[in-house]
Amino acid sequence: MHQARFISFEGIDGCGKSTQAHLLTNYFSAKGVDVMRTREPGGSPGAEAIRALLLTGATDKWSAETELLLFTAARRDHLEKTIEPALMAGQTVICDRFADSTRVYQGATRGDLREKVDHLHKEMIGREPDLTLIIDVNPKIALARGLARNSGEDRFEDFGLVFQEKLRDGFLKLAESFPDRCIVVNGNRTTEEVFKDLLTLTQL
Ligand code: TYD
Image (cartoon, rainbow, N blue to C red; front, side, top):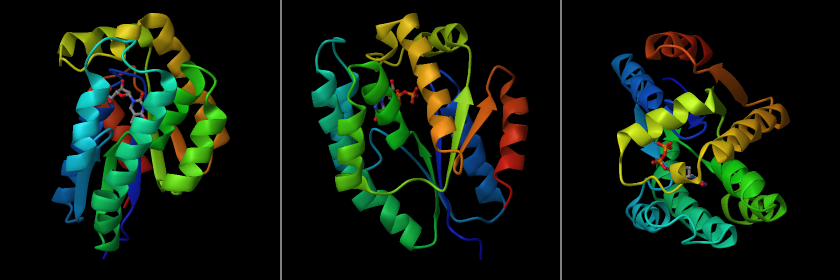
C-alpha cells in the first residue's frame, strides 16, 4: 500500500492549478492509489457555505481581517470533516489551495496580517501538506485566463493586475521559506508540459 500523502496546489488566480490537480488525481487513481481531490475555500458542506460568502460580491465586502477569520473557519471545518478522516483512512489528499493561500492573500498582500495569520494557523489548523506544488505563471496570462472563465466567483480576480503581481512575489517568497515541502513549477507552458513535470515531482 502506498503511504497516504497530503499534497496541495498553490498559485495566483488562473495559474492552471485546478486543471493540474484534476489531472494528477485521475493519474493516481488510474495507478490504483486511493486518492481524493478537494479544494479551499470549501471541501466540506460547512466550508462550502463559507466559500459562497467569501467569493461573491464587491471587493470591499470584507476587510482582510474578517476574511482571515472566515478562511480559517472554513479550513478548520474542511480539516476536521474531510482531510483528516481521509488521511486516517489511508487516502492521499490532493487539495486545491490550503493555508499558503491565506499566508499570501491575506498575510502579505491585503494589509500586513502575516503575524495574525501565523498565530491563527498555529492555534486552529496546526498542520502543513507533505508537498506543495506552486504553479508559477505570468500574472498577465493568468488574469486573462481567470476572468475568461467568468465563474461568478471573481472577487479576488477583480482586484486587478498589480494585486496578482504581488501575489506571485508572495508565493515565490513563501517557497523560499518552506523549502522542505514547496516546489515551484513553471506554469507558462502547455498543460501537458506542466503535468509531465508534476509526474516526476510526485513519483510514487
Ligand atoms: P477559486 O475560484 O477557487 O480560485 P482558483 O481556481 O484560482 O483557486 O477562488 C479562490 C479564491 O480565494 C482565490 O482568489 C484565492 C482566494 N483565497 C484567499 O484569499 N485566501 C485563502 O485562504 C484561500 C484558500 C483562497
